[in-house]
Image (cartoon, rainbow, N blue to C red; front, side, top):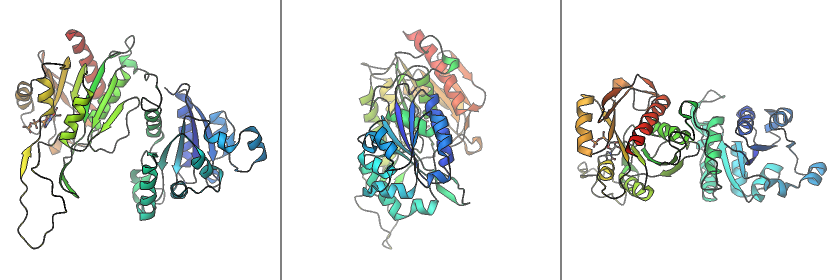
Length: 418
Ligand code: CTP
């Protein structure tokens, strides 16, 4: 996966530093090379011996180490890799990098590098939410730094909220994304074993997938949204990439890492999603898994709507363009297989059958999203596949397994269309 790529990993001081060892192992397992810079505080949590054992490389610690400088100067070190990763990125490291401080090896490297930088923040929730950290975050983003995490969760200090470092697999996925099509040519990911037909079941195909909710603005601070987490669409993108496809994932606002090897286009509104779909065509297979908002306000207020003691402001709605129906009816450049999703809360098969006819797509994947089903935002899904061949119901499975089963079916259907 990362064959021929090298990462310079800066390990800050925090309890999450123990996960950096796992990250080193994962990078190596993916075929990449990794050199570590361990900060003084990081050394309190993970030893240089562990890191050099896992990476098979010397671990760098001191800015002014005569041996290090004769072997490799710090400027050269900062440029020796394809990507610089900071994990954990502590509040202190973020502050230094945002302000251009350079008083130790880690901060000097971040200032001297000419490579892209990925940070995986980890800190106490109050520190993360502090205006100073948020200011530094905004500055670093403006400077072109990419972030993965932090995630919500219980922290070592017992508090709950955002601040937990992203899991090593998620950081690895983000590394794959950065070393992928945008930055450097990236080799196709290994196909999943169950799809490992020669060359992958979707080798050479372009698959377009929409995922997540859309946000329709009411005013600068409020919007209409829905409960879609995007998990099913992201799982489909991952499975399609693993089956050898080139995948474009057009995603509404969700809190999920980019799947490895997938080109992600982030959008907010239904109209932006529609334009991104048009830009991404042509495709062999198009899967519309997004929960697109049906309506948007007629006009977005330029300023925040105020109570002012007056009557409640009426929300005037208008219908959003139906992206699935539009693509299904294209006479020129219609994908060979168009798949829609039908999220229903009652009479699932009946409504989905009508929806398939109304939208003009080849396949509808129907699922029950009533609150008691736990599907919206949950880990599992039970789906029914409606096509010319009739209805096939898959057993309840994790969204990942559903995705693999669906991609398998779609690849077979696509072959019949060729
Ligand atoms: N869809 C779309 N663009 C829209 C609305 C829906 O592309 N503006 C797609 C969804 O991605 C999904 C399918 O259409 O694949 C069905 O979405 P759903 O919300 O279930 O259907 P609706 O058309 O909104 O029908 P209804 O609200 O009557 O259930």
